[in-house]
Length: 233
Image 1 (cartoon, helix red, strand yellow):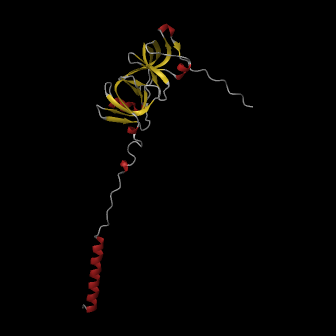
Image 2 (tube, helix red, strand yellow; image 1 turned 30 degrees about the vertical axis):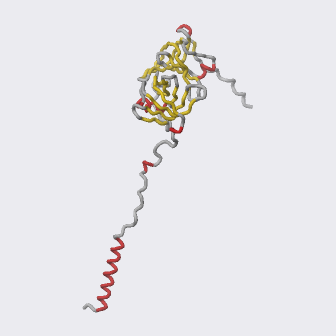
């Protein structure tokens, strides 16, 4: 039998249950969602567009002895150096005859630019140097190449590391060739022997012997080793 006391206890219990359910249905305030993990650290750290820029039309690519694109020659004779790990990206985005905008560091006394980014105005693709990649080294085929020198080619620090011939062939020369006194001037005829690699971007020769004619080829021998170290006591 329900008494007044029991009715009071039941009413209090029901009220407590209703208050508990009401608190459970109130959601906590929601803040802004965290950024997705893949959005963190995307893109280059530095803004290449703050660097000096030049604009020109691409005449041809230059290549390393293993076939990587390592630069562009513009129609005004400017040489644009790019790191070989960007070879595939440049080949995809840029074509001879394209107008490009290059941001990078200009040499003080040479028509030479060390590129940090290249934008092709036709494809609207921008390529930015963000670090090295990996590439397989294809083998070349030893043969002779000949022609007349159009212009010298340079490494990233402005050192001469080859020449461009009138037919577009790139001759890559080892540093010891210039330390030994080799000089190749524009218009000079030259015959080169070495491993030849032909790609869709042109022909590049890793030169091992050089001369004005075929019968005057001289090997580009490496520098002789220095004196041996003194014997240990």
